[in-house]
Length: 158
Image (tube, rainbow, N blue to C red; front, side, top):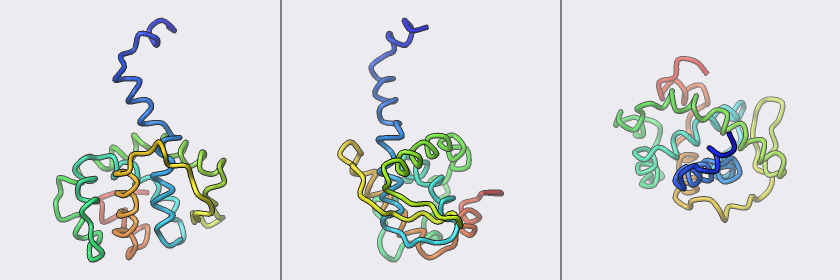
């Protein structure tokens, strides 16, 4: 079994490094660092990676203005294709990234599932476009509550 892992293609190793919880934790941290804490906003962390890493959504997020909101994000359905599936796929990676952030004492999760950014995180290995997309996603989600965000994006359950 070890021989097979050592013979993996370089592209597979690159993919593994880019999808590492250590490399992606700053993306989630950046989202919470630029959003106001609210009850149960931990649930929003499960949307960050699937939205920021999906090319069509990332392109939109990088062009977001202060006037953009959840409704403008949902205008073009092609941005939302596969979001519910991708959210499930990224769930374990999101959990691992949250654990990294907690271990580094960069975030604090309260009893009501509110996430507070309490410290800086080392983002030198993180893609700057992903960090910026996460920051802008926090702007888009600023006006709505957690349940409304999930419903607007087409989720049937949290």
